[in-house]
Image (cartoon, rainbow, N blue to C red; front, side, top):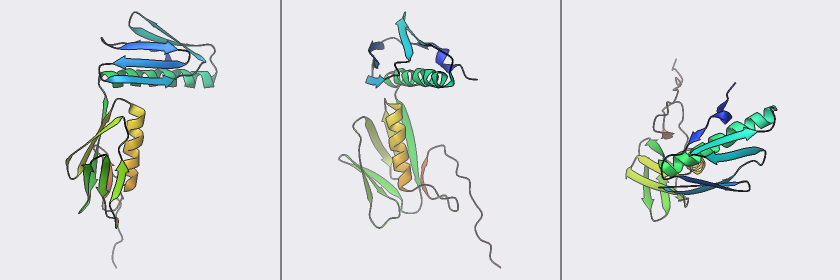
Length: 178
């Protein structure tokens, strides 16, 4: 069984963590993130180390304990290094462009699909078939990347669609003729 909730988080230089009630705020070189944590978990910050404790060993408490620790660790990593996801467009005529505050995807539909850029996510389109998303918030980045991928999910026969950079699509064999 995982004991991730008991692992301590070492704070890198230049990162400040503060807690007001149930709201944890992490400030770092790349920005500031805030998140509400469960009141069942006690967080203590001392000597650049964050520790999390729980009151009892029920299954629900164990789940909340590990999740809280992982979320705060993702906040610390985000304000120090940030997160990045790369999406590839595979298919004849599939292309992406970023104009103004909109990501425009041409992926085989009769009209291009336009998506508004979220505030906390940076979008770069280095070439027509690559989209680079970066943010300090891992959760928002993953959600937006999944929304972009869902516009045209990869299909298993030809492999066409929008996929993550290192995603492997399991291919199926098509019909065989008589």
